[in-house]
Image (cartoon, rainbow, N blue to C red):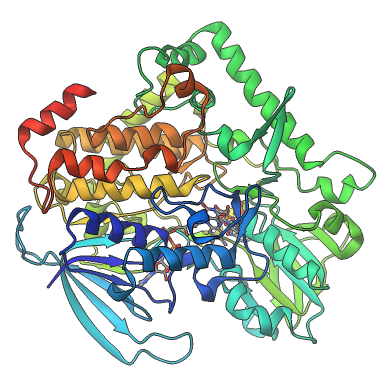
Length: 617
Ligand SMILES: Cc1cc2nc3c(=O)[nH]c(=O)nc-3n(C[C@H](O)[C@H](O)[C@H](O)COP(=O)(O)OP(=O)(O)OC[C@H]3O[C@@H](n4cnc5c(N)ncnc54)[C@H](O)[C@@H]3O)c2cc1C
Ligand SMILES: NC(=O)c1ccc[n+]([C@@H]2O[C@H](COP(=O)([O-])OP(=O)(O)OC[C@H]3O[C@@H](n4cnc5c(N)ncnc54)[C@H](OP(=O)(O)O)[C@@H]3O)[C@@H](O)[C@H]2O)c1
């Protein structure tokens, strides 16, 4: 039997394995991945030529494995897809993880083993049906069942493409693909001499990347952003200017002083010297005015940075200006991480933007519901690439289906019993009441897209992820001692790596019941409050489905560190705590700190140690 089975060898799965092995180097850990290389989104097979990180070097470093140590990346540059892949491969070698990974192996079904299992038992809790030797083409050769005591779902939130079902697609007779296939299909679509005119559907970062890639490979591009949806997202330069100061956006949002600007319901662990600032900014009349101005200035600055309203060409480019303030978009946004000027490319005449819904497809043609602003009703194209995002559902079947409710996995409303619906409805209402009282500006939700029409209701509605601390089930496994499953990275953040590291350590502590105790009813209350607030905080991002945190990342990290009973505030002075940005480097050595505090091998720390941890907070 396997001690810990990790599904996914992306950044989350690799970091989880490394963290668990640090704690117990002899544990039998197996990692599965359906790809043939490590990296997940950054695996060799998913890379496309212009893929780069939104982040600037060195913010994608794990705290204990700096990119510079392996000669990857350059200061001030976006990291290329190839570099990310090389870095994660080096990480897997460095921590001796390669021998534990079974590539080309896909988990298809997870069953719960019915017996009651206690915390430190070696019995199996989960059976996982696995297809071995999975390749892009062809069928898997074998199916086997693996048994494990602990299961770590590190399958990523961006693995199940949301491919729209467009009427007439079977008659299209030209390449029709999702942006997640840009890597494997690059040669046969964008290097194909018969493909000259490419249509791209979607208005967010993958659409920007696809438009850029198609236009820079000499294609004429028809970029379709549906009228009935949320419209284009914010995609801005990595730096902005606030007054006389040039600010690196990614670092701006992890400076405590700026996190205070966000209406955040997470506990405030910023310490007595500065925590009054958050209260002041959200309860005092002057404070509220400052906060309001901050968001107004940021909105105006972002419009300026993106040059939507600048120059003669802005009629074509101005269409890309999002309909609402960046305040509401979470990470449904991105950075202009391109070598060529994106605006110049769009305004060169090579790219035409259409704000219209697609009615149907016919051979080599896209038909709109109505004429677009330029009077076009039909486009003749050679390929259609749907950059339409991802379904937030897990890529694995959980059996029996009731597990969806217990584990907090998205499910369709009609698959829940009335009793199950009522349970969350009550907690959700309680959460909404709390949020309304504290931050009335977040309700009603969401600010409606200006051009909303009934066609936008086409997507199947799933319940959101409902995980305790965004990681563990809110149902029985959390409430009993059988803590046997976690879900890593069912989140989206602007700075993902520190969050991944903290979630991995939190999971280790959770498996060993070494977190600060929370009562059963509090688990449900906290889960509902976190989920409802995420939904209200970034309704135009991914908050409807899972935590999508931007300005609120640091309070989330604090929350996890506090649960671990470790030191939350990691800067050397109050001033630094207030203004200096947080990143992975601030959590360097945290796993060792935790191991020292709680003991090694199966984490047999004493009750007294845990109480000490509680007191320190
Ligand atoms: C195009 C693109 C660009 C991005 N750019 C950035 C960026 O610049 N900065 C940033 O911070 N984030 C970015 N992200 C977000 C990205 O999700 C994270 O950077 C990071 O990859 C998340 O790591 P993960 O391990 O949680 O998930 P993933 O990287 O998605 O890895 C999940 C792994 O699980 C495997 N898997 C899934 N299902 C199964 C199964 N059933 N059986 C076996 N294996 C399975 C997959 O093959 C994959 O290897 C980007 C995402 C995309 C799609
Ligand atoms: N490093 C990078 O450069 C990079 C590159 C790509 C992606 N990413 C990251 O990956 C994550 C996912 O980005 P994403 O752009 O793939 O997904 P996304 O942010 O979810 O955006 C999906 C887009 O498709 C539209 N859409 C969805 N369903 C549609 C339908 N049926 N018909 C037409 N349009 C539809 C959505 O708008 P409406 O539903 O409102 O119409 C939205 O504009 C983001 O966090 C992003 O930052 C990063």
